[in-house]
Image (cartoon, rainbow, N blue to C red; front, side, top):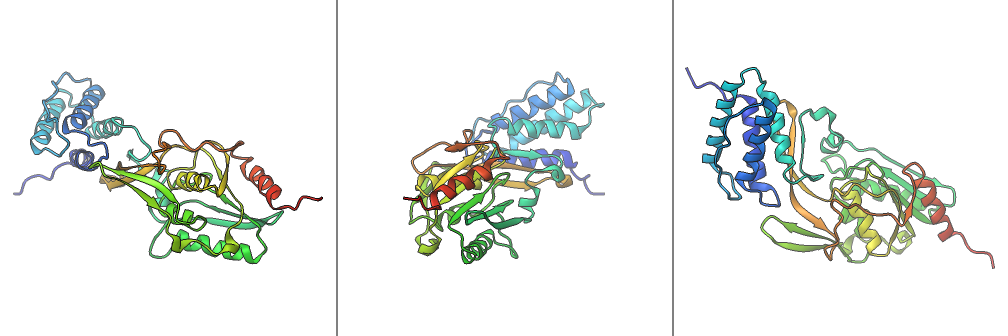
Length: 322
């Protein structure tokens, strides 16, 4: 008979360890990751098993994994009443908490994830011409799949609103959890401006610019307001601060979430997911928005943001009687 298959809970912890040890932008060490995981498991089990000695290097270390597994076996012999699946959750959550961040996360129950629609390629878009010729567009996520491209959809909505007589743009990213394409959306309205600075695990840092070829014709270069709230994450935050930095938009609403970065995620058993931050994203000059958020110029509640932004834009496009 062949060897018994490794249980899913142990495999999940090992996969998470590999992801954190090899991809995390902050180069977490094997020791940091496995000590945090095992300490959480001991606490959850009420165990007295000693902490193994792990290697203090930023890499996956097979010998560390073996020591970790042996300690887990000892823990389960001591506390056979504890469910290994509960220990898995404790271990991976502890890894996440080493560097808490909106792009370092764990969803034991994927169906409850707030980014499930985004990851699985579902996006809603609404647009209308508001009173005062304000072209309004809301979308739920920055999605690009084989059958849907948010950038093409935004361009289509802009085209239709411009034909209807739009004199200003109201881009509504309240509750928008991010995704792909913010830099290219910014490029529609700026002229080759710097958008973000990306810093990688190996220390490399580079500024990403708006591509001039994506800039829309002059008739599209209307006043812009971007409405945001605490549910505006990642790409939506980039849209807001980049358009503001370029002098192209006024930000209206509540401070954004401060979840700015880039993620690498994997599936675990039972459709659980774990992801780590693999790239720091700041303003072009190092302006920090991760953990801080984008502060609007016009502060309102989320519910009042669209009305406030529309009023602001109408003041910009309505001729002043002389």
